[in-house]
Image 1 (cartoon, rainbow, N blue to C red):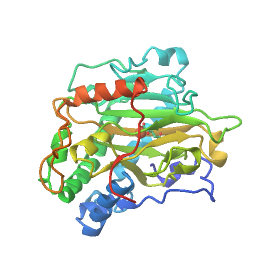
Image 2: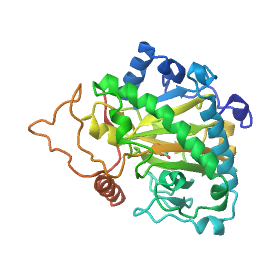
Image 3: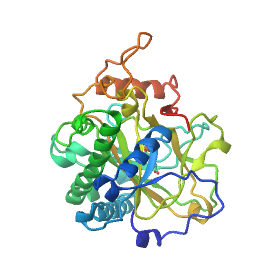
Image 4: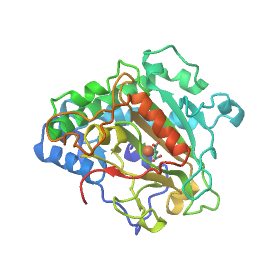
Amino acid sequence: MPTAEYFAKSPPFPSGIELIDLPQISLASLRKNTASEAERLYKASREWGFFLLRLDTGAKASDGGDSALLKDAETMFELAEELFSLDQETLDKFAYDAPRDITGYKAMGKLKTDDGKTDHMHLYSINQDDMLGNRPRRTNAPPLEAHRTEIQSFIQNAHAALRTIFDILDTHLGLTRGTLSALCPLDQQSETSVRLLSSPAQYSPEPDRISLGGHTDIGAITLLFNVVGGLQILPAGRENVAANWRYIKPEPGCAVVNIGDTLVEWTGGLLRSSLHRVVTAPGEQGGVTRRSVAYLVRPANSGSMRRLKGGRIPPVGDGDEEETRSVNEWAAWRSRQVMLGQLKPQTRGGADL
Ligand SMILES: O=C(O)CCC(=O)C(=O)O
Ligand SMILES: [Fe+2]
């Protein structure tokens, strides 16, 4: 999440709300190879599938922090503001063609939420390969075309932070260091995207309104920035009823990191991908526009969903069916299942809480 100065532009997150107290992991400590910090990261990735990544300690690059990434994230928030202030007709010209191609604009109200209503979220997915030149250029909405350099910088810095996390997961999973990064490289085609989201202010905020329905992220890992609350997790093992969902409080100087379904497949369920959603922000925050920025890392299209071999990863047992589909076949199958209502997204993998 961006800096404290940026937070000061929105009303505060109210006190007295039941929260999930996610561990805050310092990127600077991870980069200094602090064993206890790496251990906390692995534990959180098994128990919650979520943690906060503190980016503002050791603000100098030599201290291992990442103020450049925080600045880039702020630029992405400004870009989201500019993008979603375009008129509806202009935005609709860049409409996505889901499920075939999710790059582009998803209008508010296009998706069904868990309670049978519709979503309250504009969303625009920017394809990484388009920005980095790994495939022919698309034409995106004008503000995005005007800020390709800034989007590229965000991608590079976000990816570098996630490489540090992948390396630590490799070590704790007993894999050769570099294994997970090599499966999600920057220079090969993938469905990795930068997603800008915007949920408009509500004049009389409805606290229980679901802005973005419950889901798990399909890719390997996600780095998410938000300022205004509304993001919730359903703790593992809990029934999916309103009273069981818990807020994550946005924290200045931190990003939220969450594990996706692909890492659950690759690790034979050692890591957890948690069901999460966005509802109306609590308190006064419900009356302002809620923006967020996500970097959603997917594996290279040429990769496979097969469970990785070695280290702590349990081998495929006699009773288990080995997942042999390619990354794209698996993603297409999963999206279709969810769309047809044959697969209800739920928390997967991980250790007992
Ligand atoms: O806006 C948020 O805080 C969450 C967005 C999200 O979960 C997603 O884009 O997958
Ligand atoms: Fe998500």
